Image (cartoon, rainbow, N blue to C red; front, side, top):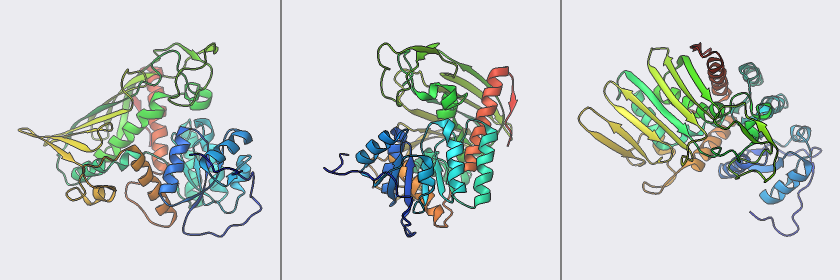
Length: 395
């Protein structure tokens, strides 16, 4: 969006006290791709986006002009010291999440923090404890929970349609790091953490399976691989294309792909393949839940339908608010046949986060406790891959 002629964002308004209103006033930390998604979702959910903080004052001013927001914050302290901000969206590189989210909570702000909420389970626990002590809302965008057909599947699981689970399996595949010329700040463990593919996208798959199927992974065996030994040192934005020609190259120590085998607390076998180097796969989160009475398949790239399998027949259930469960219908914002997707999921997640700020308790809203669970899974996966041994998932 192009800013109107003459629009100059103000640098700081920490001295101005704004009245609290039912309409949340928010600040966004970060100005990359996912920050733009947060911005759009915040506005769609009825919030007023007051300001933005990017990686430098110059970039903050550029983002403020581009987004048409009032304030370009010079630093984090200016954001946290603004008494008119109700909610802080943390959309910065992974290594900054826990400190920025925790400081926001300590400053009395509600928080929506990108995942992973921390690059270690210990730091994730510190953030979860801070949120609990503050009494403030702190949520994490595991937004695939907000596909209406995912809610339809969960409602059918709750109704007992599938019987005892036999097998839970699937994959999450992307290709944006397929070639040696592509890179991103996530590749650097100092910025993204020790895990890349699993922490970035595998975490979504396991959150969805545990939440929908109502299971808990108890132990796992993981094997990781790095298929591209060196990448350019330049940290491009996600999905932005090759690094500039002549960029220096550095060794890659984070995983490009991995396989995870696990068992739930009830002994059900779970298996998943996670990859950021699978040609042609842009964002294929695919899962199959096989029960004694029926099976189900959800494919995030075909989000308007749910495949159901029975011993003697198969069935395709489409998103249709006139016939789906109440929870699925709640998330359907257009009639059947008009496709919904990822952006609507994010919008509903943010809307539910703001509802929680106003004292409601939306069903399925992912919080920092879910972020903590994810961090513990990441730790278990990395430990297992390092030791090449079965590893207990704590918590």
